[in-house]
Length: 194
Length: 266
View (cartoon, each protein chain N blue to C red):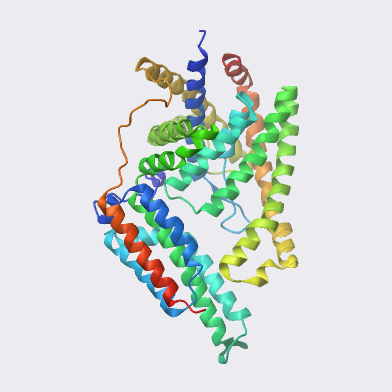
C-alpha cells in the first residue's frame, strides 16, 4: 500500500511512541546484579531504542530514549539527575549501533555495533560522571571531599566503567538472537518507510 | 507482573494543591529547587521546611504514599549524614563514638545537608503526587511553545507523550498475556543461569514488537480517518487556564522567598 508523505510521518510518530512505551515497561522490569550496588540496575529498556535506530535512523533511537525518560519523570519514577544520566547512556549506546548497522546491514555489523556502543557508552558515562555528575553531587551534598580526583577516579574505574560494560554485554546477549529472529521483519518494516 | 500494574505516583484528589495549574506547580518547584540552596540559617531552613510541610499536609495525600516516594533516597540521606559526622572537623568535640570524635560542626552540617536533600525530594515529588502525567504533558507542551519558532516540534513531542501514556496499560496487559502464553509453552523466565534467563526474554519481545507495529498502523489510520493533520489550528480537549488560585500561590511563594532572604545570614 502506497502511503502519502504526511501519512507515513504520522505512522512513524506513533510507532516511536509505542516503542517508547515498551521501553518504559521494560525499564520497570529491571534486575539488580550480584556484586554491584543496588542503584546500578540492568534493564532492557534500550532494546526498543536500538530497534528504532535500526528500522528508521539513529535519531529515531534518540527519540525513543527521550520518550522513555520524560515519561519516567512525568509519572514520578525518578529524579532529574538520574534520568539525564540514563538518557545520555541510552543515546551513547543506541546511536553507534544504528550508524554501524546502516553502513553494512549484517549480523556481523550488529555485533560490532554492540561492542562499539558498549565502549562508547562506558567511556562517555565515565567522562560524564567524572566531570559533571560527581562534582554536582558533591556540591549538593556540601562535600568537597567527594570532588578530589582520586575519589572520582576510584568511582569511575570501580563502578561506572564495569557497570556499563556488563550492561552492554547483557543487552548484547539478548539482542543478537533477537536480531537474528527478527531480521526479515526489520527489513520488511524498513521497506515500508523508504 | 501484578506488582507493576500501577506504575506512577499520582494519587487522585481534589485538594487545593491538586487544583493548581500544572504550569504554576512546575514553575514554583523549579524556583524552590534553586532557592533551597540559599538557605543557611535555622530561620531560613525553618521557613522552607514549614512551607514544604504545610503544602504536603494540605494535599491530604496519605503519609504512606509520600514516604513511598522518599524510599529510594533514605539511603543517600543517611549516607551523607554519617559522612559529615565523620569527615567535618569544625567546632567543639561533642562526644566520642567508637574512637571517632564527633564535632558539633559535623552534626550541624550533617543535619543541614540532609534537610536540604529531604526538602528537594519531598517538594519535587509533590508534582507527580498531585498531577496526572497527562496534565504534566499539557503543561510541558504549553511551556515549550516558544520553541516552535525555532522549528522544534513541540506539538509532535506532546502528541507522542500522550500516545505513549495512553498505551501503558494496554501494552502492560499485552506483555502479561504474552509472558503467560510463553510460560505455558515452557519458557522459563525465573530460574536457570543468567544467560538463559536473558535469552528467555526474546520470545517475549518478538510478539510485543510485532503487535505494537500493528497497533500503530491501526491508530494512524483511525486518526487520519478523523481528520488529524498536525498541530496547526488544532483545538484542545483539556484547556489550561490560569485562575485566581494560581495568582495567590505565586504571591504566597514570593512572600516565602522574601522571608527566606530576610532570615538567612550573610
